[in-house]
Image (tube, rainbow, N blue to C red):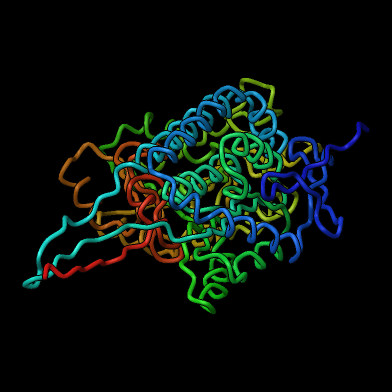
Length: 477
């Protein structure tokens, strides 16, 4: 076995081990083998990172928007230049296909950083005015302060960008924790950012759930931001409430995909399969809960099962694979459990089993015959498993679609424009796609309702989440 890589925290411009020397083993999901160790950070490490971010905040807050923009643009350029290093690190983190990571993650990451670099110079607010005789009022938008941020394991690099880019653009300083299973690409990002930012503006600490709890409970951060499970979001909101921290939560999803009888069935099946299976279904917006009109149900299921049967999973260097492994052994067990516990009325149309005995691969799976109250319909699987249900009319489709605890994303497949507009109004989700599913752009907001959390990523709305509003009034006398 080759020598393990050693990953380190990045605090105040320096790479350091955990203060007490403890580490976590990091496993490559494509092989199931340990390839690195990372720090298991404790209170001392969190204190050090928060102190660095707090000390760096006044100068970064007072930097002009153009100065912050220039730094972010340099970071975006550097990510492009070092893309292959990041792709390799991300693939070790996650087992993702190299070609797909190169094509589908690096370009949007760079674009998103450049978007927020521009947004730094375009904060909007009410114009100054006299709303009371002899007094002029205006609004200042200011950074909130130090931000404690926790990123997930499904898109370690991209979610790190969604966290730090708006926060830094707005003038905040950051302490970011990657998932304990995927720290490698975030540590490399710290190296890149550190070359273009003052010390302490951006810090990375590695660790487990307890490390994340220490960050959120710490007295220094003014804001806690997490992308993760509903359980984690509830814990963060509860901890933050103790000292009234601002909270930004992007949690789970259970996206309904509503296919009407007039949809192009072959095209819908092809695109829904990709949107449901991409990244092994480990996406909060994944198209994994399909509702199909009764009249075209059998045709659609047959088409979707065919697409799933042809969807290949495998090692990162295989350019023919659509998706890689599940992220960790616990996730493989979770996904397998959903399929193993299927009720008798359910039918596995494709897949439904582990692939190989090396790594955490699971076959593209389609399950039909399900009822609205089935476990696999109500709960987020977070794997390459697509469920299919029947509906008879628009009202029933809306009822089924909205009858879950999540409200992040959804899609409608129809040629009827009026129906699409009605559905976009009635679907209780933060995003409604029409005749497509899963594309995101930097200019548009991403975020949900209900147990999918609150706050927005991307867009000017996501940028404003990292600012606070101050009213200033002056006498004209």
